[in-house]
Image 1 (spheres, rainbow, N blue to C red):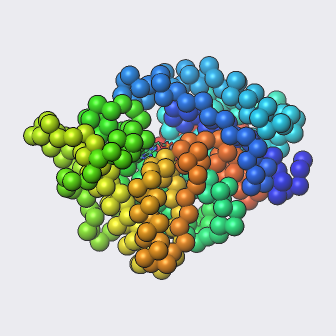
Image 2 (image 1 turned 90 degrees about the vertical axis):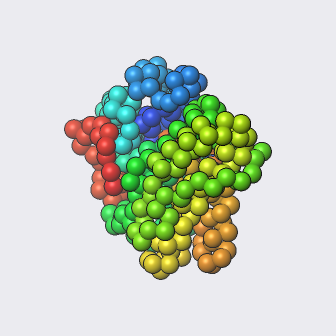
Image 3 (image 1 turned 135 degrees about the horizontal axis):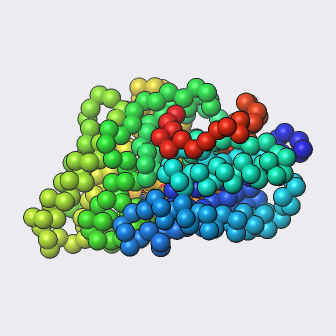
Length: 333
Ligand code: KG4
Ligand code: ZN
């Protein structure tokens, strides 16, 4: 086995619609291969669970071989096999978990189960190895919107979360209302760049005393707006919607920083790829003199390297997971 801080960890993520495998050595990414199934799901306007697991089955071996090849690593050189065991789609998770267990067994190497949400946070440690807790995390993905105080792996305080739709889910649903396709986030961002935020949509819970979020009212208000104003420019509606989501997120981050007296902010998850969110977070950082961290785009969305990095942390602090571990679709922090 390699020295502990130079462990070669293979990370697998099949929680949703990307078959992703990455290899890291310490904090260095040797490869990070993502096979996206987006085209297979796009015509349904969202992820179809059966199609997702079938595609993972079809692609996982090829993605594995590609990850080894890109990393220039022989499979015998892998020290630890890490995999997402939740949250996510049951069938999709099972493909990754069983592949990981079989691989670990076959190679005689330890196996580690990783919480996908933790993986998103650890993407930041790959991008910024000097990053150290405590920090506030805004974790925004297709299934989750959480505001956390991260004091250490085993010391995470949940400050707030969405009471209904996740931020990414809101992007996906509104993109469908605007007939822009799937996944909604990147498309809305692109279309919004040609428009202006001239319409005011509600910022759910923005002024509430807690750290919770709500996006379902915003989505409904876009729906009614479109019925009343069928000729409104899609670009302006997209820009106005995007601004409303970002304003709601920023408001609660600001509140958390002021109340918890923590001056470091970390963005994580697919929605952290949004440039308006990154820009406004950066501005908040300047206004309040905060350190603001967000990973490069390819580490924001689902990938295997982030799972490998979190897997290393878990392995070093807790050792391997039991082979009895199985997929947990509703896993939380
Ligand atoms: O973290 P992720 O890749 O998968 C989950 O764990 O859910 O996040 C996917 C979500 C989708 O809802 C997608 O629309 C959103 O992230 N997303 C974005 C952007 N890129 C991806 N949302 C806003 N702006 C983006 N540029
Ligand atoms: Zn994710």
